[in-house]
Length: 325
Image (cartoon, rainbow, N blue to C red):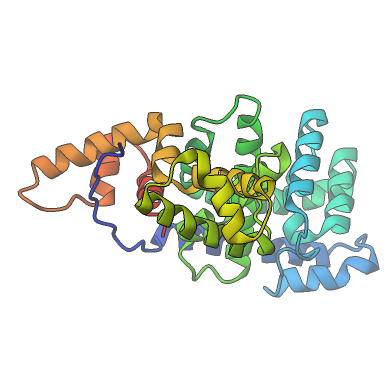
């Protein structure tokens, strides 16, 4: 049985610190663009990108939207496993801003130790430092999601979860700054973290996909099962009676029941929290203790997080699991 946990959610406010870091990254990107424009060795095909960077008109992702995130996750892991640290890695980390071609040109110059690379190294480091500072500041939100999704997961799935979480964190931060850093960054990061959990499911083959054609059949089957439960129809007759009412074969009813069970396992709060009991229990305990000593006041997310010694995002995830609507 899932314990009752009442926690007051508070509206998330964009911290001044996050906005300052976002502005710092935007200014650093502009400085890098100005340095590139002043570089006589800059290939002509990169001039327009450098102008956009230097004028504060940069677009992220510069190379366009990714249509297959699971494929990108696989390729990122393959590159990470084979990669040896090189001087140009900081320029490679700026690919979202520079684009693949300019990033490759700049990182190659740094790898080779050419004079051009040393001229631009300071601007690259400034930009990478500003980006790293913002990633570090908002990183705990992504870490909380990675902890949540990794709890109860298979051991060989955990590395995928961590990598996907990092990939989504970097993507969300770069886009947030490029869009003008006006949105609620923690919420924006959380949206991308949820998407990252789906990438992992597709990569490891644990995703549950329900076709549009099955949705109506599942709804009808659920109504039938509720009716049969009210009528106390014996279990031995359920499949045959359901097949007759739905005008399908018993094998099709068996398949639909299997799909329904898989979906319920994903969304049923009892199953979700059972898999993540190691995360949920200390939060539920903290909420109960605060409620018992709060003179009838419902504890806030922040208060529960402090008492349970976890990030508030983990408390939010537990609340979402309890009420998935």
